[in-house]
Amino acid sequence: MAFAFEKLIVYQKAVDFADACCARTEQFPRGYAFLASQLNRAAVSVAANIAEGNGRFTKADRKNFFGIARGSVQECVPLLELARRRQLIADDVHSQLKASLEEIARMLSGLINGLEDRET
Image 1 (tube, rainbow, N blue to C red):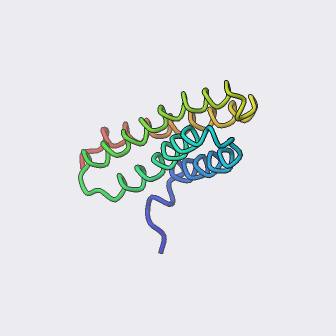
Image 2 (image 1 turned 45 degrees about the vertical axis):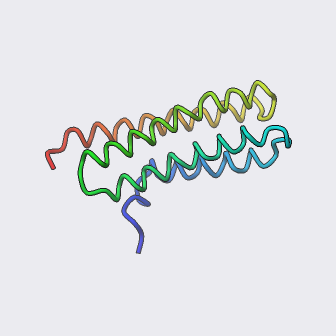
């Protein structure tokens, strides 16, 4: 049986983003393990907090975890920029990953606003 959050497109996109980050950071040189680790943890945090938030019973708890997920999206932005500047990822890869983040951020905002609009 599937968990309800697995049907959310934003969750699926967040997992895809985390997977893409993991694939890219495997190629980082040894001296950049700190950056690979931080980017991977932030990327995984997006999907993990969507899942955890969806499992909460109160609207306030769900909203809190979705907000944390949105914060993790924001955290990924400077990490990707640094990776681009250090030439650890190509400009086109940076653009693709950043576009994914922008889409995920919009979807999370919609999810949060949808919770605010609901009465229960």
